Length: 301
Figure 1 (cartoon, rainbow, N blue to C red):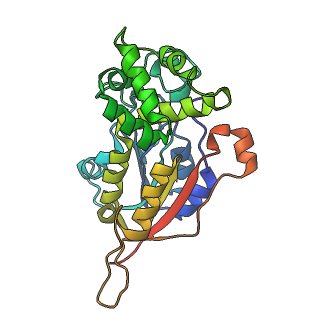
Figure 2 (cartoon, helix red, strand yellow):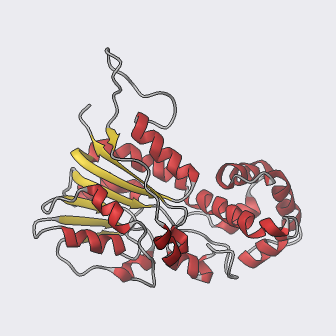
Figure 3 (cartoon, rainbow, N blue to C red):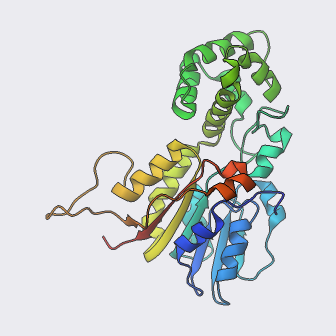
């Protein structure tokens, strides 16, 4: 498990859940199972934990514990699969939305700029379009949207035009081909950062990460019991803004609904402030450097 993924903000995220020994909890990003194992340590014999992960590789980290059930599905389907297992409501939900170390470090998954591999980037390798499909089939306008909205790249139009020109010669099928094609047009001191932003943008598009997160968050008011907690770790501003707005306003756009007296009608209230890793954790795991943890409690309407 330690080679698969290093759990980020482990103690802080579990403390935020205020775990009840007899409670029912969900880890919607099981991955290497680090958060799940630590959460099980806080549960008593009557407690129950469900782990979600759509990546088939995560099943290798199965936990042999009668209190644990792994659901091999995207967490956007959380309500449907929990109901299948007889669960209507839970005491807490934990989410660590980053790409696992295993996914980054497996060249043929195509997540990292450091390796040459297939331009894939699918969390579930059996589903949907790959990054190669996006690069080779999207229109110029669609590529600009992806690079600008999900990678925050100022050079989005220029990069899109370069891809369109290159793919008329031959399809772009590997991470190395994509990197070599684009890095010459990026200032040397910005190459690594901007390529990482571009790869992030493709990954978000391929896996519909924004849509998945919205669908997931919208199910939480019905799923989490009053007094229950959510503990959510984000790694880029798009995710963090969605989580922050949902906790604050109960929606992603517009102002929160209010009652006759002007009181906000929101399903969650934040618990504490934004939590980020300390320098010791960043030194031990550099991928933790962009993590942001937000904790909230289910309220009465």
